[in-house]
Image (cartoon, rainbow, N blue to C red; front, side, top):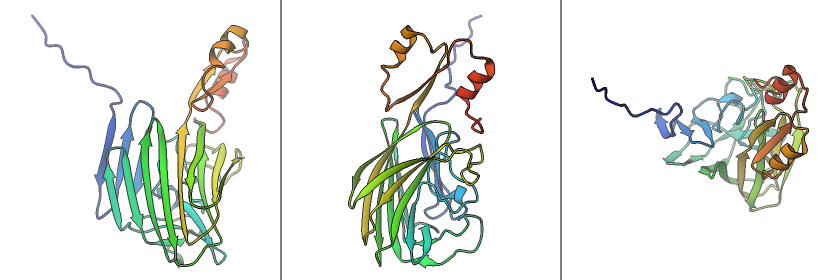
Length: 263
């Protein structure tokens, strides 16, 4: 008896769709061979609900914290404000999401609570998938010039390459080791490093930056010249290579593959 041959199904097929909730609220689900994330746009204030990409081990955020990851943090009048509330507009197209909002609220302690003081500001944020990276354009306008504008991008298990591509005002990038510091933890484990974009304050601020998750490679045995000759030619901007010397025990290998608190 001849049996029909079914088409094999992919275990993790490509996904790029917008799930609408109400008004401009919803969640962008994305997955291809290089990148996978969810970007929720919901009317909640806690730090782990902010409209920024989420993917355990790649795009993580602090939990119950005033350190809102992936959003502009604006200092004004001795207070810190971040975008909040229901956006005015949400425009999704394959590989792209733009969100327009006209409300910034005092971030407080990052937990569920009544909204704090309001800052008169408008934000347009466009996130685009481009060659395995996320390219984000932020356009901010304020009624009065703020004291400071920063964007924090945490790094957990998968190393991130962050690059500022264009800015309307002076900008610089800092990277800080925050491993083991209690406030810098996600639901899944500790955050290893914190990338911060610092923007010179102005009434109008625009910036475009790129976040590229690197491919992690653990090489064992890694103490042989031939092996290193092969892997040292991988481009550092796309690959993070860790060498484990011959004779390392199983715990050493696990530690390299899963740093403490990251899986």
